[in-house]
Image 1: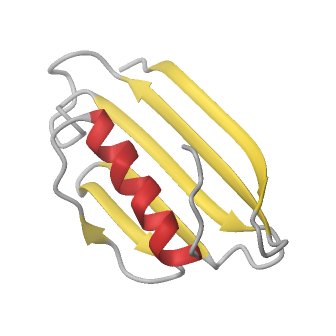
Image 2: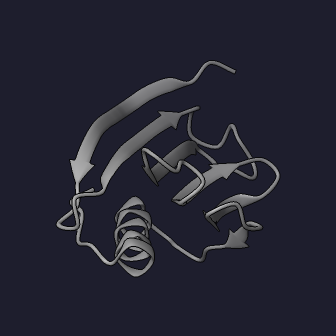
Length: 107
């Protein structure tokens, strides 16, 4: 099954504290109805925000078989995330970054 990349974002963000972080977001469309277990049975993604000097200080939201959409904080276990749209995933990711890093980051 061939996936089509919808977008790929990669940038360095300096927080008000001076901490340098990296934001990476990608989204792949594998085709409507062709991927049971992926987001909306169609999308696979991996969105991560992490401290450059300490990459395990991170928020990772991703979606892959067989787990669906889930979040990892630092090196912790995956926690399922209930979202219905890509906009809700983006909002969840932004809020998770704010909670974990104490900073508003445009995603």
